[in-house]
Amino acid sequence: MAIETRPKDISIERAAGRMSVVWQDGHASEYELAWLRAHCPCATCREERREHALNTDSLRLVATPPPSTEIVDAEFVGHYAIRFTWTDGHAAGIFPFEALRASCPCSACNPDGPAPLIVD
Image (cartoon, rainbow, N blue to C red; front, top):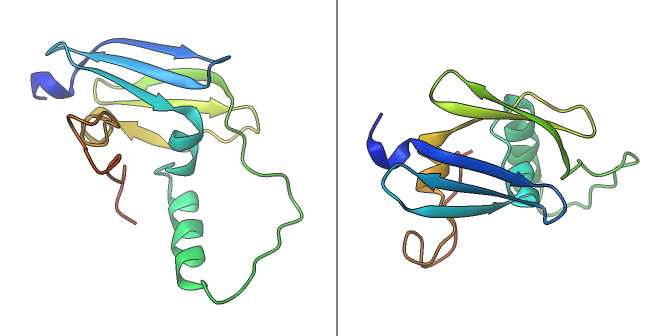
């Protein structure tokens, strides 16, 4: 794993709704928890986003509450990723550090806004 994709420090500020990562090369990234949940890389969430993108002409009403953007727990997956457990119980998404770094929302990394975490 390249030095720029290895985290040195990760902190999750639940009240502020963000995760901060300081990378081994000294760069700092801040991710909104809502953005992370909206870009969950698990197969179920990716499929839902694909279906939604294909059905732009229809209005989809959902009787269930929206996905949670609050984190209950976080854990490392090997040395390459982090997994969150959201308050609604969802815990299937594995967020690779390489993808997180490529999606850094700072203007130096992505001047047009954060790149997609995973291309659906």
